[in-house]
Image (cartoon, rainbow, N blue to C red; front, side):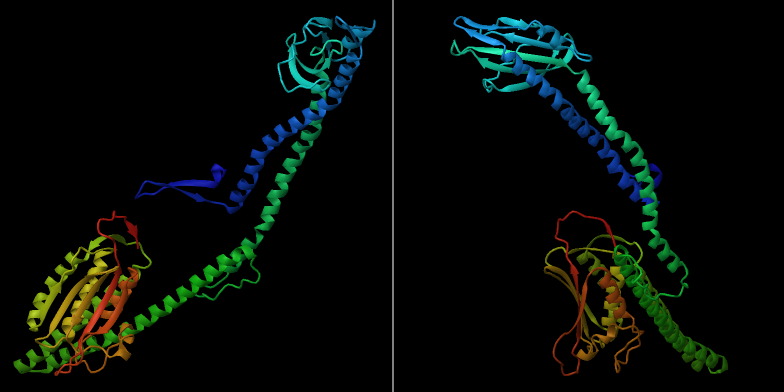
Length: 494
């Protein structure tokens, strides 16, 4: 597991949640390399111990087995049963050993002791044993662990009767051999593992050297250098990261270029109303006729209104663009209520131009996950454009439709937009010629910017065929991803 000194726990100030921040990739990799080793090492010791036990048992079991066969050859069979012919040196042979005590036992067909030691434990009942086969088991004699070899020899003179022969030995020699095997295997590991850790440490540092070289390459770049990083000398594992970084720098370069164009266009657009304001103010100062002064003041008011509108739209566009990079709260919004309040706010402006403005609700509630402030800005621009470009005594209709997506349509009876210009009107400051309407050319770009933030689609459609007055009208349709009514609110961040 990661070391405590490699992991900092920070508490989020807003949510109180602890988040982990790794300080060192080197330390993290080293930890995850050594942690499995420390986990596997005790398991390997246990396995080695079992293997050493098996190795230690093998030669001594062979001797025990030979002793059982030797004892079985001393058994003689008579018509009344079995007898054991014991050589004079038998007891000394089985009990004199420099390290271990050896016990033996020979039992007759009725379980009577024919020879040997009564301390040897009885053979457990097992229906699987076969006559003449050698078996091994563990046991205890006089509070000592022993290894027992035994076999069953059929009594030839009495069918169904068997002689049991057992030889038991304490485990001192076996344990000593096991200890020697373990020490011979584990002692070198205590030397090799620290050396391996040191070699891994230095090898890992050398392996991460390309990261430091890449760091030096990036640090030596000028702040304005957004050219792609050469991936030819970058390790293969880092190339996806560098490709992603190059893509990000390309997007950043494009974004900076767009901002520079926007600033230049905004400065150019602002220059016109400000120049008009200055000219009208100078004329007003030179005039003596009150009527002419009033006319100049009215032009000053019109120019200042246009300038204020342009500034507000520039701020709205900047706010919409910032929303793609900064965190803005998103909540469940019901479009019927939001649009109804928006249309109500524009009724006075429509009445001043004798425009019939109407609102058509959807037959069901329409919910979307969105930022209500940005949505309000979008709908304000759509309704403002519709009223502005609709002639006097015209009609503006705002409607909602419930489909797989939530659809908002703003329809007007104005001159419409030619099919060849419907994509260009989403460019900043672009205006269709011949409309005879003052504008900044930012309304529809703001609409598309906000729509993209909400994964919505914007379409421009002709409202109806040309009428006698020559007006075709325009429908601006915005399709939002719809949230099914009754779904749980899931707060998220845009």
